Amino acid sequence: MESWSCVTCGGCCRGFDVVLDFPEWVNIVREYGVGATSPGISRFYLKRKSDDTCLFLCKFFDRWLCALQHMKPIACKLWPFKISEKPRYGRPSEALYDYRGRRLFVYVDPSCLGIRWGKPTTDFMSTTLTEFVELALGTRKKQYYSTSAAPSRPLYAKRIDTVGPYF
Image (cartoon, rainbow, N blue to C red; front, side, top):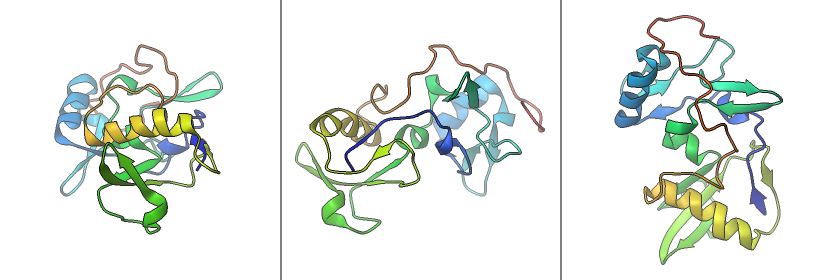
């Protein structure tokens, strides 16, 4: 792929179960209430609305933005990329990415509208992809290149302690 940038289409927030690690779940419950999450057998997930979109997907003029930008789960920060230490989805020679001498395999969900196909640009490799890798490795917390520009305050700040439609 040549490059990637978020086009704020909201496609990443439709039809996916967003797995939360325990600290993410605790932070979301503290700020928005337990109704903002759904329990699974062994995991917690972000709640989805009846139209199968994430509870925190918000329309902002003609853009779709994440209201959890200030505490976005790692699964959301990494989408549309999957980064692993072993080849998982085939084509290992194409997925191989050397990060400071560490062999990683980077895959992308082709359904993302922000992908431009072709030979990777130097800028994409040195900024955006590096940021995704650092997020995946836990050496970076803040996003700059790997997210859309969003308002500095949450778009949605209501606690959710009941079950039902929220918007």
